[in-house]
Length: 261
Image (cartoon, rainbow, N blue to C red; front, top):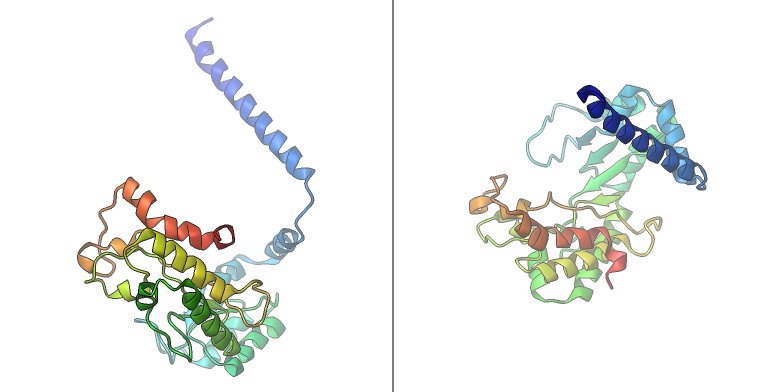
């Protein structure tokens, strides 16, 4: 056998094995019952234009209540038309059930596919009723109090049309010069895990379909809390061991709170 055949045959064997594995996996998947929700999502995606798919990824902020810097020339009538065209998927900082319902009605009744909007807001330590900052709550070590404050915040914000909060912040924060340390549970990994579990349960309750619940989310990207010099958005010097042992565990607990009693 010449050298070329020696090189080609192992590759052909590898490709054949790969195809067999993929085909077997597809066969196994075909025998599984189809998840109705996934089936519905797949059918909806098949109907969407590229512009509508991009629109679902477009998140705008209330022009009269900006977070950070942003374009403030847009007015409500501009947003209304964008919603009709399917060019908006979610909003920040739109608060009040009258306005959220008005916009939602446009999305559901006047856009081509009727996809509902999502309304998000920074509910960090209370909505109408204000509680101690998360760092202060964590210093009490009272997980029941953390969960209860998040529960009250969820009830109040849901009643105002908010469906999604950017909390809890699960960064491990060890530099007091960092201004956003106030959103965290501090420097301890275990306490950060427990605070994340308590707050997610408070926001989301037992069933997110309940009207008085809001969706929690992971915040921020892992190791964001290790910004050099406590300067927001600064560089981070991070080993893989430090990342896995210190910064990722609270994020994991936040993602799977039901498994952590």
